[in-house]
Image (cartoon, rainbow, N blue to C red; front, side):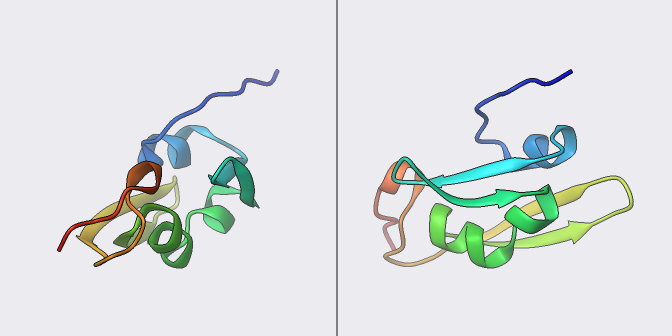
Amino acid sequence: MAAMMAIHDLNLAAQFSDRLILLENGKIYEAGTPAEVITVENIRRICGMDVDIINTSRHLHIIPVVPVNNGPGIAGEQVKS
């Protein structure tokens, strides 16, 4: 059985997905398992956030730390400092 969903909550995506596709400006930026796709570097670039990622035996836990100054925000918005 397969299902496709669009979700912006990275914790839910990591918990309930076997494979993820991370988009940037409507194009595939990264695809793979949650551990391959949800990385500090990828989230910083795409979401404009620094995060801590904890990998447990069950799934990843993504914890936002701080917005990156002048980086892209959600939907490409500029993050204000």
